[in-house]
Image 1 (cartoon, helix red, strand yellow):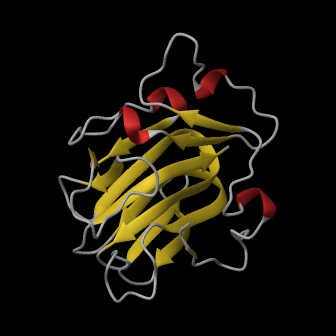
Image 2 (tube, rainbow, N blue to C red; image 1 turned 45 degrees about the vertical axis):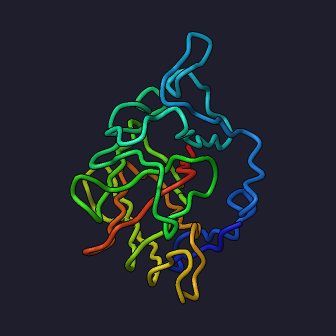
Image 3 (cartoon, one colour; image 1 turned 135 degrees about the vertical axis):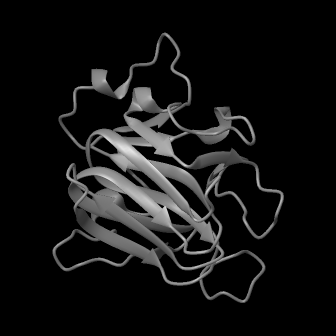
Length: 193
């Protein structure tokens, strides 16, 4: 299991809160595939009375597929995102074979939510310091979390690969992942309403 890295302001809930624990014991979690079947309901059809979390199943994506609107029916659209199955052992996946990578513009990935969310997390592996930023509907910064340095596998990094990076704040409409002049991968991308 990966370690967590968060940079939290004293105004924000922390990852140690019970509903955001590393083992993700969240009762209302939906494992969301890229393409909706007739029997699946999209997030807009879900009656949200308690925190509901969506964890994206990336395994339906093809290697080197540009990822944009595949999860729109679950409430999220990606920008500058590519599905890959890493051949470089420095970037292992957390679960399964497929991860997301910021591309074609390296070092940047954005996710926009169709309705506001209160938590976003992913297991990240990066060649540089990585910053997760959350924004409201007016693109005002709500908060940030950071992976302080590279955490590639088989390196001398003190941080293990696939470290949990998360942000917990109300009314998130978009998030960005930025590794300045670096490469990174995301796995188990999760957001909670």
